Image (cartoon, rainbow, N blue to C red; front, side):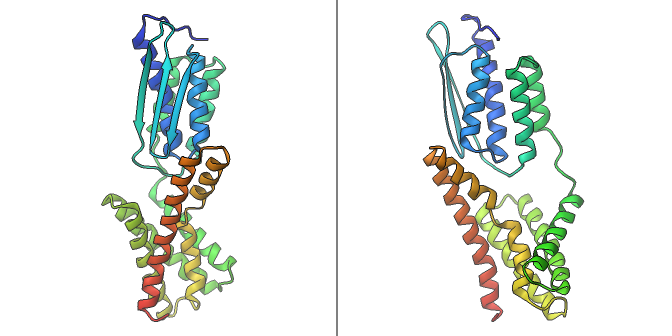
Length: 259
């Protein structure tokens, strides 16, 4: 147990900052709200705070701790971008458990969390390979021929390139999804007309599954089941809007192409 001196507000602030750093990464990489709040509360209890109030929604975390002298400290974090990386969520969970078990000091915990934040993402070639393999596999799985799978593999490369390019332009996520879907659908139609692939629908389904926000939808339902209704509804709304953007992107090209 880390004893907090009532006069050492700097140390108390540092403890709260470290806990919010962990909570921020959890929320950024796809953890449900209840996990974020529970992690922050456990970390602060270990630091010696008896009263910890945490409020979390999909884009913000606000935490207040009561000091032994009756004062309080409040910090907030704005979450501007969220991606799904459950591997990093697992790493933060493991670090939090080790800290709560007394196996890490506060400084070691802070550095370990920073190391997770600074981790380099997977190399682009590996992501591209996964897009190709997943597109091919799903196209064949849902009834496509091997030729359809090859076409899905190629259009998956187009989808990956569009996502990477639009990310560098920092486009609105919904607009980004719609444009990437439309360009991918156009690539599929061109491949079919070139004789690579037979069934456009079987090809496209392999690409669509890559951009459908399935994990986000699941997380939103878990939030609502856990009683975090506001966060669940916000997440659900965003997931539905993304799904609509995907559908619009593909549908507009198909309608324009007369398919």
